[in-house]
Image (tube, rainbow, N blue to C red; front, top):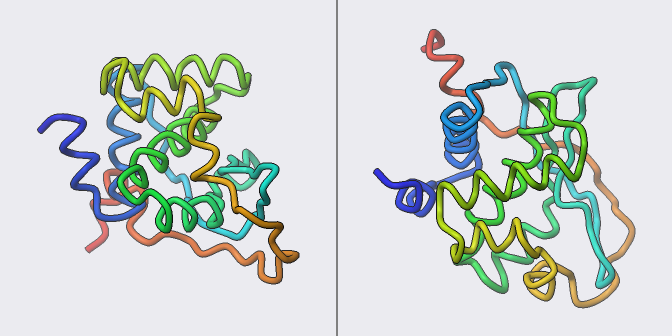
Length: 164
């Protein structure tokens, strides 16, 4: 199955994460086991937001709910593409790519190789600002009330196949 079809058919964050891991393993030959993925309200505004971050100490990727909700509301057809993009970026951090510029370049190269130069995933890697109107919240959001992390079930399936 092509990368495009696999991404289009992804039903949840766990499916997208498995695709990210597969792509990185194919292109770089490295895998990171035992990684946790969660979503939390990291906030945002009409000025900007943090899409996700990788915590080295906790070995986890935290994805910001705000842009995910905004995309679901305004442009749901790019939801999986955006999710792939931010998870790829943070997953590369988890395997040891800590330099932001180098990581962005790797995200672009992997995206271009998997999807082609004109695909939305590659365009996100090239120029996120072109998508900003769909990602930013149109008004200032209230202060974050609940910063709990909701961990995603089924993450790292390929490394936990011994669990029934």
